[in-house]
Length: 393
Ligand code: ARG
Image (cartoon, rainbow, N blue to C red):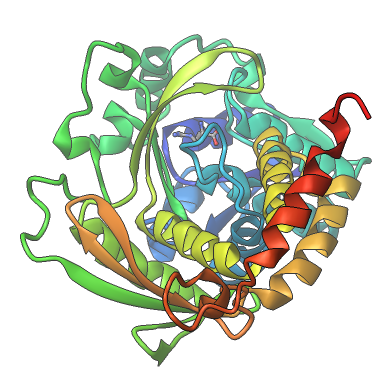
């Protein structure tokens, strides 16, 4: 009988390596797909590992640019931040991976896709909702939900038995997901809330103690909500992110430790590192403060919250998200300007901001001689405000 083709989202880590073997044993012709969103990615090694693991074919794609332009940028414009601490690096990558799973399934004429996400994580939800919305006819297989292996230890035994190489890397001590927008670190000793995070768990950032003793200034320029220059040098958005990760990382910017509410209703502890994301998030907020009216700023907060929830919960290819993007496209036309920050031991201090759309008028704000704010304006204005609670005649 002819084998059924299946496309597996594959990273070469323990879970997906075991998935590959398990799916092959179930009789599938497994085609692996690996997306480079900015991890320490070695396409050759991934290809070799997948082939050795029995993959029929392997697709490896560098998607960093598409990731930054079409996934990170809209979320940055939205100001999307989950539970005040998570700038959604992992969550933003999933719909993009799903998009390619579907594309490859179509070009290979495959009816099945699979992933190595666990039954209590968010990523299964994000990947599957995206696949279901792009290609409802595809069948999704999640080995970690159906196989007999009950723990990471059992998986390691399974891997050994099946001659899958299990490197002793940080990925084994913690569960790590890294892309250009940030690193998510969980599990291992972090599951015990009495444990503080060991320094060696961090990948991108120095601690405040180990950070440079000298502060550093960085100027970020935006055009219509998109970062376009750092320190007056024009750069592609992807390069800006990568460069700010380095700059911010050496000044201890962008660490958070979150007791996070997962979609499945449990709390988990997640450590995040996202230097570039935090710097850009703060920089854009500075421009907004300068150019948006008060009601626009307040409305934007609602959008930011809703956008973060949609991304976190996996509703990317979704009507409401598209409509919010349309709002952001329009509102961000004003987000052109510059911000100058000083970075120092975990702090991002604003030194200057400017925009041609600035609504700040010194002539109205000043207490000095050149004040154009007419004193007569105030009295009548206050009388009108007082109308609702006027008593008597
Ligand atoms: N909790 C985060 C999220 O749901 C990150 C999960 C990523 N996985 C990991 N291995 N750390 O977006």
